[in-house]
Structure formats: structure tokens, C-alpha cells
Length: 271
Length: 286
Image 1 (cartoon, rainbow over the protein chains, first blue to last red):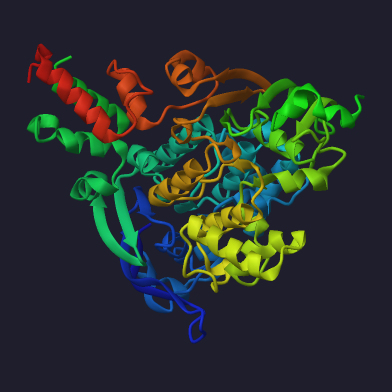
Image 2 (cartoon, chains in turn yellow, purple):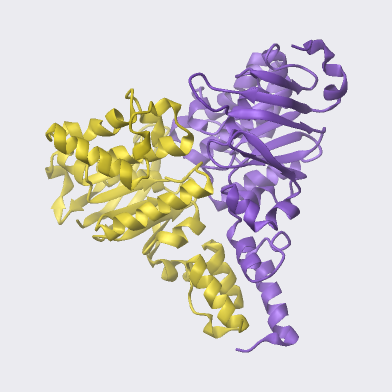
């Protein structure tokens, strides 16, 4: 699916003294099967933008298009099945007595038969390495386990685009690596992933393209290398190191991921 | 059970002490913490790291009396948080993980003042302390904003300001920067750095880079205290880090892979400089 935002603006509390212009003329395409990272400082509009992707927030100007069709003409249930949104700290919405029932809640609303619901639940729990948690209470899990269960609940809808808002906040490094691996696995399976993150080092490892937001506007968009090398002061540590060495070693290239960067540095040192 | 009044003896000279503390959640087969002992001297800055489910958050809750140890003893400024939670909370303030859960008031400044109101601080002093705390976290101009219109990182700074305004001598920070971007994190860390020596700080985090300047780092895994080490020694032990799901930040990790001492090279600038120095000293072949 191709998801497009065209000149989207969003004003919170318009006409009150608390009016805040959170998005200003944002145009952006999420291509089928890509990992698109949305980066930017706190308050730059990242979460507001994420919530426009399935019209949880409706733009106060501009429009959202799903395969070139105005998203407001789709039913909400269809749109939210096709574009799954995982909030920040999604575990706060867990509610059912068991993990299995919690994950089954959303797909059951789609009117699938029980067999298919069960299959989807197991499949998404497996994708998150959480199948052994199926019979447990979601409230007795650790923070990382809860996070995976909450994401499984959205994945069980079978979305074509999965929007993850700061999915690794508060996770330990092992759980974070699992989640980044899941993102790459979903891309392999043809699902587009929109990753909202303030952690540029994590973005560097998975993003095909990067959209940088600043004060509600798109300040840069392109491949990860294009965006980060255009402004190495706002780039992951890998890009900052490589940029600093370019003067002495013009052949260092434009590595972004850790592994690429390590290889480039080793080549540059002749080791 | 020992008498809590004995807290002025050995353990009482420390800001915080835990003696063989064990705690299990109801219905869980394994203890969340088991036999944990350590002490914080006044003015120390100590980090706590370890995998999710390792016992970090349980430790925080035992320190401010939200949980009571099953066995062993916790003392905070010589008092037992299990029997005197309200007294302990005047001395020990906790910044919890998810700021959303802690914001209560209609405006930012009221939220920062909330803890002071409960302590009965006079109005004038309250104003000063709130203004100082708001400045300390870089939120000037936000005083009349409504907390629900703030971003996650801004909310985290409001929560931190509320804690600083109460001026406890011991601060327990449970992932204080988990929702901040790089700039916001640097700002909060700089302020936390300013508290060194002035406050006793226990800083729980997943980001080892926040603890480069810590006096010591405690590693909790599976409910046990598996290390109590200086950052320098901990960062150089790649096997131990891996076993405990700890990941060095990108720059020290690149440094370690390239054969440099990881705790010495913190910034991209320092690493680039070290690489240049090495290549210029003769071994280069471009």
C-alpha cells in the first residue's frame, strides 16, 4: 500500500489561548515495503504526524491518501485494519485476563471466524517471540514482554502499514535488538513500517528512508545516508565519526549502519 | 526482624543501604530480587543497569516504601521505608519511568508545585523553588502550558522539575531520559551532572553512556546483584556486558572493535581524533 500525506497541517485547540500548530504543510509518501523513520526533537510533531497515518487525528488542513484514494472516504474500520498504529507505551492499553485474549480482541472485531482469529493470534505472538506468554496474564509480565504483546495485538490485524511510535523506549538492549529485527522481518514480508524515534543510532540500523521534522515542518527527507550526511551534526554516531574522517580519507564513503561503518573505518586504517 | 530504630548504627551512616534484600511478587515462582546488598555514601552518583525483568524497578519501589522486602533490610537516611514511607519520601524522591502517569495539575507550574503544596511550603518560597526547578530543566515559558499538550520528552522534564522542587537529598531516577531526544537528553544529563556531590543519586537506565561519569555501576540480572564496578572496568569487559544484555553506546563499541580503550573515547570527535593519530603515526596504508 502507498500512503501519502499531502500538505497536512494540524492545529491543536484552535481558537483558544492554548492553540498549538503541531504540523505545518507536511507532505510525505510511505512507499510499499519500506522502513521510513520519522525523526526530530521533542515537540517537533512526530507523534502528531504518526496519528494522522490512520486518521486517529484528522488533519485540520491537507489530506491523507491511501493508494491515491482520499482516506476519509474509507470506513474507519477498514483504514485502521490496513494501517496499524502502535502508540508510545502501548502496554498501558492491555486489558484482557490472558495475553491470548488480549491479542485476539482486535482481529475478532473484523468478523473473522474463531479458527482464523486463533491462527492470527499465534502467528503474531510468534513473530514477536512471545508465544510462550499466551496463557499468562498481561499484568504479570515484564515491561519488554508487555510491549511485545501490545504490538502483537496490532500485528494480528494484518496491517499493510505498521506505524510504531517510539517502540523501543524503556526496552533493554536485547529487547530493542529483537524489535529492530522484527521491523526488518516485516519489511521482508512486504509490510511498510513507519518508525517514529528520537534515537538516531537505532534509526541508522533499520531505516531505508528518513524524514526529519522540525517545528512541525519536514526539514529533510531522503535515504538515510542523504539525510544524515547533509547535516552530520544531527546524525547517528556512525555518520558523525565518518564525516569527521572524510577530510583525511575521502574514500570512506557514506556508511550509516554500525557494521558498514566499522568495515569502512577498518579499510581506512588499512587493518 | 530488627528494630528500625537501630538505623543510626552501621547502615545509618549511609544515604541508602540494602542488606540481603529479597522480594517476590505474589504468585511468581522466582524472587524479583534476591539477597541484594549495597550501600550509597552521601554524595555518590551510582548507576543501575540490567535487562528488563532484572529487578531494577522493584529496587526503586523498595527504596521509597511502595513495596516491603520479604527479608533483609532497606534503610534510607537511617529510616526504614517499609515502616516510615512518608518520612522517607521527604528525603528520597523518585522520578518514575512513564511521566504520563504522574502529571496531575491543569498547568505546568501547578504540577511542578504539587509536591511542595503537600509539604506546606510557604507561598513565596514555593514560587522561587518552582521557578528555579523550571529553569533547571529548560522549561521557561512553559509555566502556563497544559501538561496534556506537551510532548513525551517535555512531560518528562516537567516531572523532573516537580521532583527537584521538593529538594530531596537523595534522588532515584528510573530511566529519566527514556523519552528525550539527543538534545533534551544532553540537557537533562547536564543538569543531573550539576547535582553531583550536592545530592546522592541512584540513576536507573538502559543507556550505559549516561553513566560514564558515575562513581559506580550496579548490574542487576535475574534479581541478583551481579556487579558493583567502576564504569571503566565494566565497559572494558565485553563478555560480561553481553551476558547481561548490556550494550555499549556506538562510539565506545566502535572504539573497542578497533582496539581503543572504550571508556576513554566518548564522542565521535574523540574517536575520530584517535583514529587519525593512529593512522598518522605510521601504520596507515590508504
